[in-house]
Image (tube, rainbow, N blue to C red; front, side, top):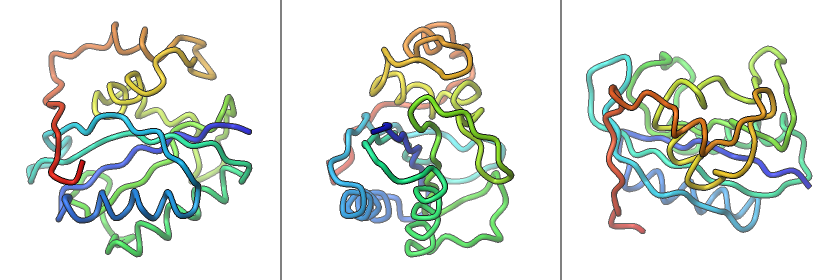
Length: 163
């Protein structure tokens, strides 16, 4: 059974939406592995800071079925589909990895290129799945994080009240 990794982010009422989304994910997918939570400055716009983390779980659902479930959980948490890529949001759930699958099917891209582009995705992924390998580059996430240019990374590991 493949392991799915989900990137979670929120900067609107994040102390409510993230714990609620974790409960929703657990109800659907079962036990979750969780990274630490990182407080991150927004990328691409000015606004409130985000909380970001990665969760992992094993699933026999297809990647499309998982992505569809994630979209519904986002909508249940007030996410609107009109929002721009770089904007404030109640909840952002992205399927970034699904086993060793490589998928580029319109809206669904796995592995997500954000893994190698953004510290708020790569650092918690390296923490949770550091010894696993990127399905295209075959590098471990720990090695990708070690080589990542951290000079622009503006994030701090935190312990939110709901942890």
